[in-house]
Amino acid sequence: MHSVMAGPRFSLLAALFLCGCTGWNQVDVAALPPMPEYQQLQVWSHDMPYLLHSVHVYEDSITGVSVSRTSDACDSCRVVFRRSEVDSIRRGGTTNASHFAAGLGVGLTAAYATLLMLASAGN
Image 1 (cartoon, rainbow, N blue to C red):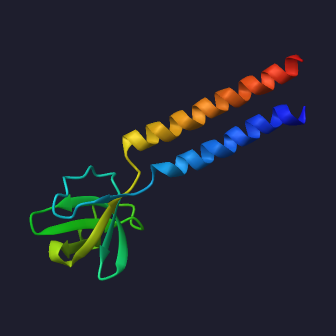
Image 2 (image 1 turned 90 degrees about the horizontal axis):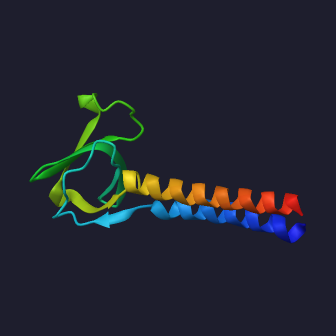
């Protein structure tokens, strides 16, 4: 019985680790595309990270609202970086595709664990 229950425990642990794989990806500052409102960016400027959402990309600057602010309607909360001040940018894993991948991994793992437990209960 111990070896049958180890499978679901391991599977659930593996699913949690897989959810962390939808993390951050480096983006070329010069070729930064327009971002959806919900997309988070980590902007590095003068060796300091700034975590932003509601990002707007302009030819000479990048603006966004700190994730500590929940409202993107606050114009005074918006920070502006000249592109020349930006050291690097990383795009967060908060896209629809990463949410789908994480949900699929957790869902499949939960289904597998349930099947294993049902199979062990039948024996």
